Image (cartoon, rainbow, N blue to C red; front, side, top):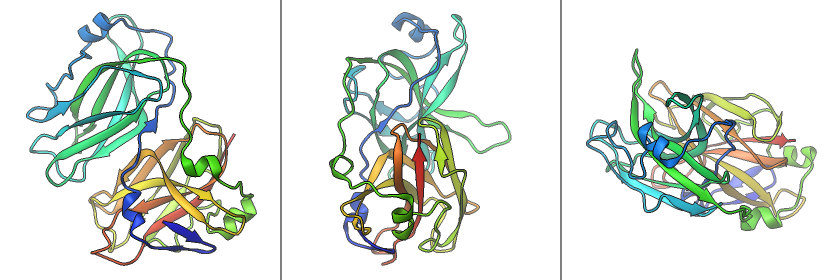
Length: 294
């Protein structure tokens, strides 16, 4: 997807943006660590625990990978899971040695497809052996977790490989980003609905939320993907690159909400793109904004 000053030029590469690479996991904040045996006892075995995922399936090719190495989990969701359901990966943060703790959502998501299949890419930056879960909470009075758990070991001391666009991107000032359409408040000129950004400046790794409503063109279940603008000049030209697998979906009532963390410091333009096939509409529906992480 190419971008010119003041607007988007829709091309077939809009669809290619949806094949997002893996997201970088934010560091956990626990000082308590478990051994592999303790994690297994707590419900996080090496082979995915699918008790809460039946009759769904999961394929995890390995339980060990080097830092920032790409790993893919695939499988099929249970028959009662609706297509378009967002699956989120979380890390288990122990609070004691008896299996108690909390789950910390990571910027790693996948969407259940029409045939109930899913494919989740992830890259982990925090070394060590930890418990993880993938799934969702049911929309009910007493929400229940539908998903699976596993343990994973991350080794090494590598660094994330920079994306081709970001490594060569031309830095833009806040004024230049505004001229290119990435304003400090959510720009909805190319969006059918409303949007509110919680902040345009935040410490790196802290949560930022964008939420709002989608209009009639953007149907419930539509996947929304977060992308970063990689400028190629100072006049607003450039391309959009997926920020990992950070996605959300439009809810049944037409609302949406996405809370995400950006670990890289700097000032960038971002957009939240509606994944609507070109065969359905020749319009691109997108929310644009700028965010500075310090």
